[in-house]
Length: 276
Ligand code: THG
Image 1 (tube, helix red, strand yellow):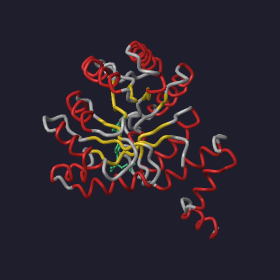
Image 2 (cartoon, rainbow, N blue to C red):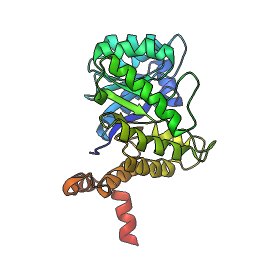
Image 3 (tube, protein in one colour):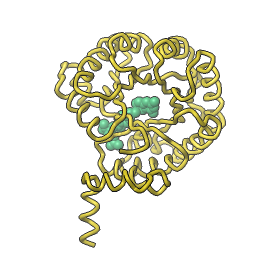
Image 4 (cartoon, rainbow, N blue to C red):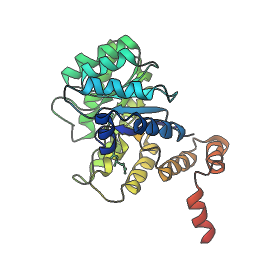
């Protein structure tokens, strides 16, 4: 098991198979994704109904009711819509993570009170009504304001998952650098907060995405990322994660690494090495 807390990304209505499953109320597809991600080591399951339409509260409630009987791990309710999150909160059994608040007033006012009331963890995006700041300093400014507001509402720092925001390299080749710099700065300034992000965003629109995702994850780990929204069914990604944690001195007695080896996580690369 990795030190990094994995939030499984696959139950997301912006993905075609999930959109279809939601529309047809096909529980088997959703449950299969939930069980497989939990078995692959996810600590949380992201649940995103994938729409800003009026159906979002019902769709999110259906997803939660479909998933929670088949896994024991908590859910990460992924929506910008306060009404959908409030509906989800009413029926969710294990205290969820809320994904997410930001500096946008309707999210601050509509979602932060829910978080404070239920004592949940919460992801805080470093963006506001003006959008996503282009620079590390700009994102830090937003994070400072969000931290101040959450502290004022009694949310402890270790319930907060700051998101420095990853965006695709396809449209901005400096983008990952800004994100990595922001991770380092956030880690320094808010040592008790967690840091997470949507890792796969980095490779949207590019081919062979998994290679980019893995390189980015490794660098982000070195800067202090301690959680990520990613695809735990990508075995090579999980192998890269376990190996990077070992190299960073976070795997005492190589316990996780050797355990993952015995469980067969490195099976494919091992065959390649034998042949060489
Ligand atoms: N921050 C926070 N929450 C988020 C995001 C974020 N939630 C949504 C998103 N961004 C993170 N989730 C996903 C889910 C799926 C994909 C990307 C981000 C995705 N999936 C590909 C697919 O399904 O085809 C496969 C992934 C791959 O090949 O790498 O692209 O930034 N707080």
